[in-house]
Image (cartoon, rainbow, N blue to C red; front, side):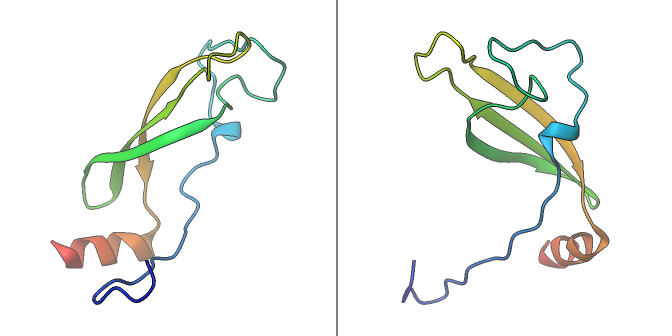
Length: 90
């Protein structure tokens, strides 16, 4: 990633914390603060509006009996600073 013309590394902004999301009845096979917490291995932005992102996360069970494969579909409200920069790019 270094030395590639036109490439620049973006910053990081925490958009959500799965530990604070409601579990909505989800269960886990191992003790954890929130049953949604697991080994998230993939993420894709599936759409956006001016002030929100649609994000799909995936965790897999790693062929481990105490883990579960899950897909998380989130709608994330963007901070004002990111709303402006995303709108300017379209």
